[in-house]
Image 1: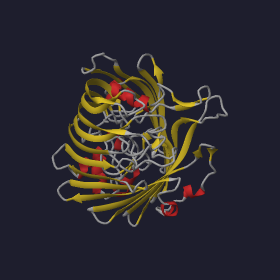
Image 2: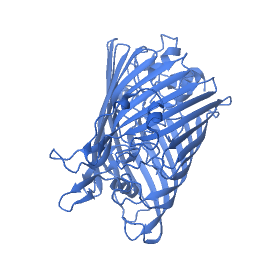
Image 3: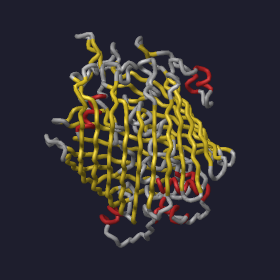
Image 4: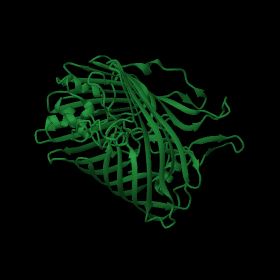
Length: 546
């Protein structure tokens, strides 16, 4: 892939003017690969995502470069003013665009309509998705940008996703029974927000994303919004990933020493789906906690980049109520709070590092290491990405995490949000292999993924999965083959039509009671053979591979 072609591939989400782009590159794994290749050529940091689009302009001298004429995947076209309006808007342009020079704004519809069938489901449950939404993106001057999107969804999921939602449903305290009870139908869709029941076996849920981005100087960017982040260079992250739901955040990122150093601090607010037992409002609030994440990456040369990470989940509430605010939470200096509190404090500390090595034959080796204070448990990752075959991308990755690495002795302090892990979607206690391949020709994409994992299955007895540390577990095995054939219709909002297939098999224990693991009946083999067809505007990752 030539440098010129790679530059062109960078702009498939936008039609911005060159000098006024403080937007983030949408956090979609499939379509951010070309972005990372180009950033590597510029020796820009790629291990903290979403990437900031304006970083590419620091290296681009062609002031006549017109992003509005650059199609998605290495295809350049000239705008045809005689083309029918409907064709232009469907295939090439944003639905609405305003560009006055100092002010730029676009608006596009968002949707995902799909129909699936699981031939392994003898009961023939309905599987479908109906998503409608919108996205607005804008620039004001050359230093300020914003994005806002909203999604409304009604979905009928495969049985294993239904089980996931129900296993993480919210808890409330019943004064009538003096017990903690779970509320069926009110759990999180993986990475996409809390549900409520819809018809029979369906779920209704809505969620929003958005941020404002301000770059007063080329060495600093400040963002405030409701979104998610990813630390690392692989498919998974063992430190901070985008597998959980969006959260309110404030982020500051600095670049120094001729761009060799990138330093970022993210503050956010997180939630446990557990109602406070003595509410002062008609509907009890959920218990909340705070998170602070520090990440520094240093590029030693063209080949080697090493990063250091500190993540802390700060106690905001306990059984007696809200705790006083701890001002050490806003300390911006890496490792200071970890050194002050240590691993055995009420605040849950996770330390880690990343490494990336660029080899000369279009190969990247990467890895991660994480350490927590519960029995000094660890997690680590090793992976390789290969770009040496034209129009093809290959990845092989191994991930491992000890059983309790993300847990805390204090029930409210686990490394989670909406009961979903903040790092790897499996939570903890697993070994995983991932193999991925992608081939694209103009607008056509073929994606395939093969996965194997052995992991600990924690039964969701009250206050044991994410609310405590005494859950019993059984070892399970997971196999998955996924393949998708997609045709990109419009790069501005990543509208594509797709055909998909997913084979999933899980060996897990069967007990006489979901709330106990003392009575093992046997091993059950669960299978899914899911065929899908749909049309979708995809601007964020979804992870159903668990």
